Length: 491
Ligand SMILES: Cc1cc2nc3c(=O)[nH]c(=O)nc-3n(C[C@H](O)[C@H](O)[C@H](O)COP(=O)(O)OP(=O)(O)OC[C@H]3O[C@@H](n4cnc5c(N)ncnc54)[C@H](O)[C@@H]3O)c2cc1C
Ligand code: SF4
Image (cartoon, rainbow, N blue to C red):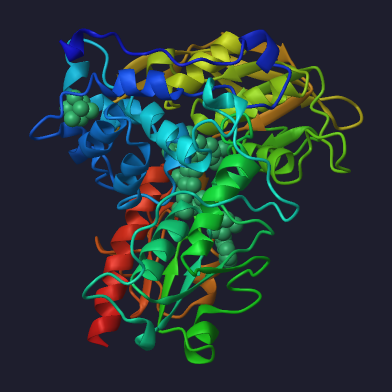
């Protein structure tokens, strides 16, 4: 029986080797492995995996195409719902979404939906036999001089029935080029709208570009390709434009002829602990540390923007951001401790990232909370003073609350402290746009369809929910695209 086949393992770089380089950790499936894994799917009549996917990817349909060896067909099915399959296949928390709901997971191992999605996207970019990596499934073609890559992913028809025709192309502005903005822009462009994305940074992709490291999400090979595929739908991307500074939303709508706006500006404002010593040299927010490494290429010797975290680094937090900062610091040559106030069971990071971090030699100090950062006479970090914690009664989130154990303070000698405690939306847009309400966490107020309190202005992704996930941001972008379409048709 198909479901008696064990889940097909995926090949990865050796942990000792990868701890010293920024190349991708996971090699992905080759075609034979993917077809074998796809044959495990039961093609359920009421597929729970689809219900659990925030963009409603038609999972059994694409998996059936993989099982039949029709990878182009699988890519076409995925393209109906997702503009970023190679990204989502790599970074989605599948264990709490599609794979977490897969019926095979009840008694055994769920279908490796994420790895199959990634395979389809990678294979479509690099058709069979075009590279020696037909056996490893991981490499892509070399980018051309301008960084662009050939586009082989099948695209959904540009002007489907019942949508805006090319003749009536109305202008829509999308602010932010993260997954929410890219997903919203893709759908609107497919329906015939004239879409421009405005991005504050010099590269498009949002957190996918500046936050998630190269060893988890290769930039030129994977991300650039998917951003270029959005451009290929006709979406214009203007980088180095900070909405609220370079130009306001009011000016876009009143002077530049944009009839609707989607705000997908994410949650890039880091939180700190407000403990003594946080202003010392050597204390970073994870956002700054990762941006300097990813966007400013601090890890590459041919760039003039290095970071020197020293030999000992403490990262405070337990989410994906903490894992990424810790594994980046490790690759820059440091011994790294993750300091987390709960236990391993409560770590919010993707299970695969925690597993990889442990394999690579990151030291986890659980039930530990910082109380002060100590510095030397020159103002540089020299130690992190912490207190041991125990778990008490559940708090509002349902998780057991960590409680300090009196008298248990101790010090961890360290040269760098990286705070990975979460982020909130930057207030620039809400402060410079009339009629745009925010809630008490600084998130934009929007209804289920993404409509904000300002007519014609929609929002989604981390800017509305606070820090969440790539796929939720994409789902919100697509929902808002539908609402924008309805709004503009009714206008
Ligand atoms: C280090 C890190 C690791 C993560 N790992 C994962 C993971 O493994 N899996 C997962 O699902 N999620 C992960 N996440 C979360 C995920 O990346 C986010 O939830 C997602 O990117 C949010 O998408 P978004 O489009 O709402 O915003 P973002 O991706 O933040 O994009 C917003 C964009 O808007 C731009 N912008 C902001 N203000 C302006 C302005 N005024 N004018 C113009 N442009 C502006 C920003 O520069 C940015 O490019 C991670 C996050 C981080 C930081
Ligand atoms: S729930 Fe699992 S077995 Fe059923 S269709 Fe989805 S992936 Fe296949």
